[in-house]
Image 1 (cartoon, rainbow, N blue to C red):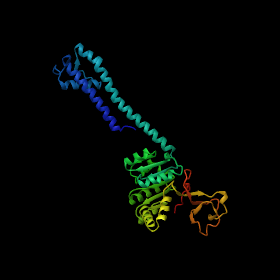
Image 2: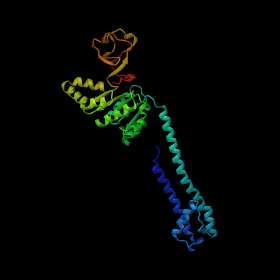
Image 3: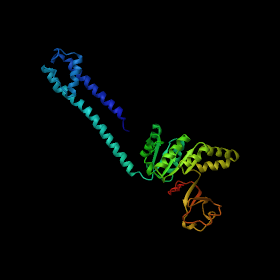
Length: 338
């Protein structure tokens, strides 16, 4: 945890002020040992003036110690206080420069090594669940960058081990700080649909090849988001409503769907490549329960006549029993742009 720069400066200034007050008090107590060229006497204001010009090493010479006691006090007390005062001021500058240099070095090193990562815009309930599912593929948390305008959300993200960028994701400079132009996949999980559209437009402009998946509340906004550059759009309100309706009509079917949605428990739906032993077979002849076949850029149902026999380049979407080793195989191929 790095202390806030303003707090660091305030603490150092308070220490310098304490040294200044102590020095002025010492001079004022021994005011008879000092001579003021203007009026010959030394008051409290003169003591603070002498302390200021002495500690800052200005030394105009209009107020000077004349007695032996005052001169000894300057040698053994005020001179060490002057050194301490300078250490405080110079130390603040050096620490600020050192901290800034260290931070710049760390950020540059982080940016130079960040490639093909995942950027998640919004760290709410949807964003957290999306990251959890993505990390279930084996993706390390260091390869996930969270962008959110809330400092509390970024603090929570960094506490979970993710990299965080505070700012408005509709602004290109904020997305550039997250190295979005080098990202492989982008998840947009904002609270507002209009924000999601703007983020998708900006993200697609910065990165033409990344896969962009976005969530919207209203189904009528899904086409607009696809036009903005999103490859896939999930309507959260409609999906929740359909699950509610299905649970009313068939509680058992609703339970199965909820089990499939929850990653790592019960049954999972995964995507995997076709193995050599399955080449030439139909989807029904495989050991797993095949739901769809991904061939090229088409997703075909298991009973689609166009599927025919499985090919080595196909990918299968199957339902399997969740185990600790079960992972959703990520599709590393970018989707075509129309």
